Image 1 (cartoon, rainbow, N blue to C red):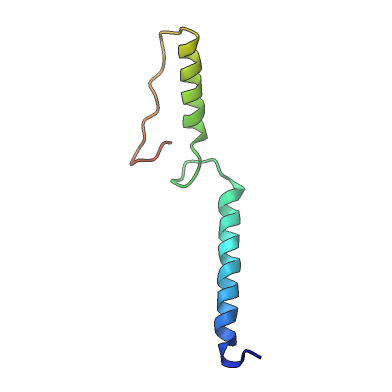
Image 2 (image 1 turned 90 degrees about the vertical axis):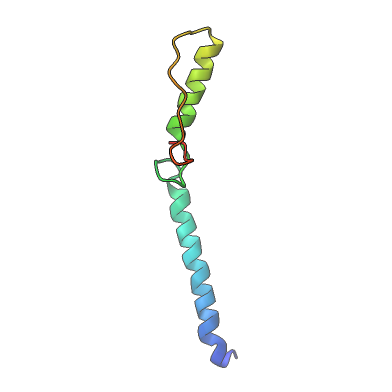
Amino acid sequence: MLGPVTPLVAALVAYTFFGLDALGDELEEPFGTRPNDLPIAAISSIIEINLRGMMGDKDLPPMPKPVDYILM
């Protein structure tokens, strides 16, 4: 039915499935220290600092700083 276009269609379908596999690998572990991961340690530190500040604590740790525009 497709004839000579069959390899191109098969490559397109394979590319789609490989992309879905790569997406699944990224979503499998969203927290970590790689640039594409969610900075859970920094988020929890910011929440702790904000809550301690609302409770009136004066001795607060410094806010996390981004490294190369990435909050770790």
